Image 1 (spheres, rainbow, N blue to C red):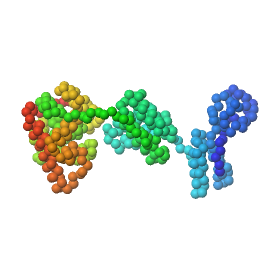
Image 2 (cartoon, rainbow, N blue to C red):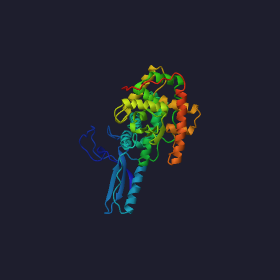
Image 3 (cartoon, one colour):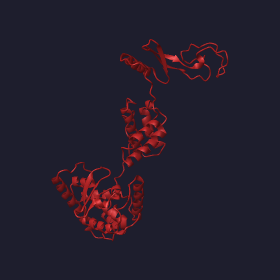
Image 4 (cartoon, helix red, strand yellow):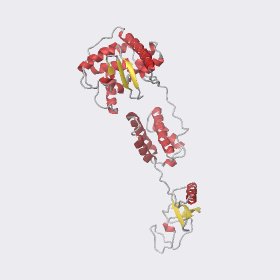
Amino acid sequence: MAIRWRRYFPVCKGKRADGDRYGKVITKGIDCNGKSGTHCPENVPSPCGAWAIDYREQSGQWVSKVFPGISKTEAKELLEDIKSNIRRGMVGLPQAKKVLTMSEYCEKYLKQVKGTTKENTFLNKERAVLAIKRHLGEYRLDKLTPFLMESFQANRVEKDGVSPATANIDLSALRSILNMAVREGLLNKNPCDGIKGMRVAYKAEKRSLSLEEIHILFNELAGRDRIMCLISLFTGLRLSDVLSLRWEHIDFNNALLTRVIAKTERQEAIPLSDTLLSALREYKATSTGNCLFHEGKITHEIRVRYTGHFKYAFQKLRFKGTSFHTLRHSTATLLDTLGNDLTVTSKILGHSSIHITAGSYIHRDLNSKRDAIGKLERYIMGNKGCMSLPVIYQAI
């Protein structure tokens, strides 16, 4: 058994007395071993050979197969596989696997993760894949190098004009894709390993609303917009969780809002202040259906639509640099300012990883939450300028 370099270009193999397709007349075979030289006809690829593997089958017949595109090292590995197969009584030459391009593997990756990731996460991966395919799509997986990974990151900023933060997110997506290739045995090592993210310029933290701005919000907004803002401010819920609220989540008797938070997938119980509870009762009297604000699934498009709506509404109130999510930041800031325990604030916002299981813990945590919500309500509603407007249904 052996490996050898074998020429396989047909023009050079035998005698020809007539003109071939290259316009040359070859009268005898060329002993070139597939190596290029002055004797080569025009347009002959160089080198025009490949590594071949010779082995004898159990019948005694010699077999020689050529594998274009593989290296000498890869040919040796295939030969070792053959020897192992013969020792185990298995005969046959391992077939060289097709190496996928980055573009092909990205499509495979998206199909694999589509059913296991949340919609927003999948959309972010899909966006990153478009950039990856544009810059690296034609490269085979086994040809990817750390240099190409760094070039991809730099090109996202220099050529595509995205921020360093976005380039870092895309590099993270690329690292995840290639990690899957490593797990599948298509790569020995992830070429993204050791590649650091780009330095991101300091960005000011998202601000919270002042007490004066909160009063303006209460006084100027009405209907659906007002009740949605009230819910977020007095519970800390995100926009997606507010939009997906159903009346079954509201316990009027015990003044509780209980639901599974979309981002953490944990059930949270949040006490309702008297102000919010009263507003919800008024709103329920004008509401139809099981959902408070939106019937049907809360998709990415729905979230974008409402985000834009509230951004415009806050601009009309002359609030600078604000969005619906600013209300959640305001809740956290005010709860902390009022001296509440950070653990309680985290539980209200759904940031804690501690699951409430025992009855004694439930009551203790719930009482702490009630106290914190009470402080928040007294601080906001106890200051002048906060009016209570009738809650009228308002279509978005």
